[in-house]
Length: 575
Ligand SMILES: *[C@@H]1O[C@H](CO)[C@@H](O)[C@H](O)[C@H]1NC(C)=O
Ligand SMILES: *[C@@H]1O[C@H](CO)[C@@H](O)[C@H](O)[C@H]1NC(C)=O
Ligand SMILES: *[C@@H]1O[C@H](CO)[C@@H](O)[C@H](O)[C@H]1NC(C)=O
Ligand SMILES: *[C@@H]1O[C@H](CO)[C@@H](O)[C@H](O)[C@H]1NC(C)=O
Ligand SMILES: *[C@@H]1O[C@H](CO)[C@@H](O)[C@H](O)[C@H]1NC(C)=O
Image 1 (tube, rainbow, N blue to C red):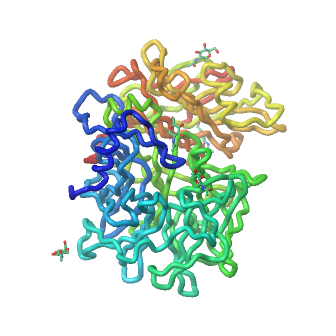
Image 2: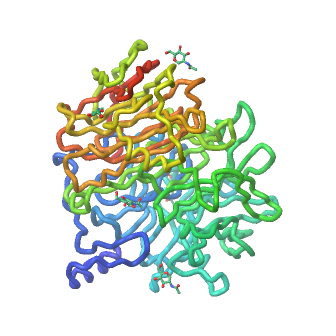
């Protein structure tokens, strides 16, 4: 790799001993912990086989995803020096299928004053003539966040291996006018072109505790002027990181079709996603983009100035979508951090993965989005196991044999006929709290039923993904949980339980669950993609061929397994 001035910083800092220096709200720099040890050929029970992760070291946000020259391009925040955050560059991988990836040289690394202290997140926009441009956040010598542009050196190279930065950088800086704190001005979106010929881009920000998506406009993509008001803002939500703003089709029979980011019109609704720095969750709003006023008016998912809808109710952050013009779909990528201790991350030599890319579209109700793993991931499926329908009684545990339990794709559906025994919920309660109070080990009425993954022989360890049905205001309310409370005997791990209610009616449809199991990842989709929960787990006993997989029911009522299809997954070629 080329000379990297950041190395000097790392060496210089060593002199200062074991300090952990907070330089910014979201990241801590563990300067002395940077290491280049670790070799993935070591004993590594937790390394994934088909989720995206680099050979070693720290990874966070996906950046600038796009399709160009017949390849999918993925850039990502990466520390070349170790398994903790720091020295951030844009690493670059390309793929033909969003499953197998080839790493290339780092695309963007600190080299000019406007990014000398870090090349942080940003997005790609395909300009007229099919030319890509990247807007990204740079950290300048004063530790201010500014926005820069980089364009390919050679657009005839489909791999876009080399990038050049504009001498005009930075293009956008926090100003006294906009009252923006220079530590709260980052993560430009993909830009969209208005009917008036102006490009628009959003920058995540806040003023005091009011989170906002500041808009800038430009005719030529180089001279940017701040708009009079943000596209949208909300009191009390804190810093908005990694905003994403895109249209989704809202027309019968075409819902699944993705559209270009600049598309406007009667057939679309718009989605605004923000990553809330305060809560570390990715929230989204569905609404209308009023182009004459350049504002976004949310219609759903925003109650009492609080966000309700999330892409994923487990571990998931800093996600970003792009329009795949090859297959006319919109693809969502997101980062999942570790639940292990920093010491364990350093020991294993890596930290962070990305979820399986998800196709994303508007549900026919118009009230929420649907997410589903890209079709291409199914090419990794081998050795299918299919069950005939079977009843699973309360307290029963049925082993799912014939698949590799640590590297599998499982689809299971339940048919519930008898709701008589459903537990009564007399007041509304946060579903995540409900899941931690009523985990898999608490016997219920209708449910818990679902999957036990990474289960050890004597059930000292297991992770449970399940449904539990309550009666709430005389209706069936479906809770989906991912219960990590027994996922590992190593209590240094974060074993928080996650949960959400799922908008399904079990009277009229079977309850489906799909879980992608990958060594330390449990990525689950409930209600055909209406609710996603991703968890990270590090069992000590249930590893390799010691791990078992079960369907379970710990309710009083029997339910019917209407479908079980499971596959072992081949390893993807990722580095
Ligand atoms: C640009 O890329 C093309 C395709 O890889 C290559 O043939 C050409 O030599 C490159 N041009 C330069 C100036 O590097
Ligand atoms: C800007 O934000 C940083 C970090 O959140 C904080 O330490 C600093 O005091 C803020 N500066 C001003 C002028 O508000
Ligand atoms: C990463 O994981 C930790 C512990 O599991 C959590 O507290 C933290 O907020 C996460 N960070 C992000 C950015 O998701
Ligand atoms: C089912 O519930 C019983 C009693 O509440 C508990 O002892 C058992 O561990 C539970 N089973 C599972 C798989 O959690
Ligand atoms: C639910 O599963 C049963 C099999 O148990 C099947 O006969 C039925 O068609 C399914 N219902 C729906 C709505 O798909």
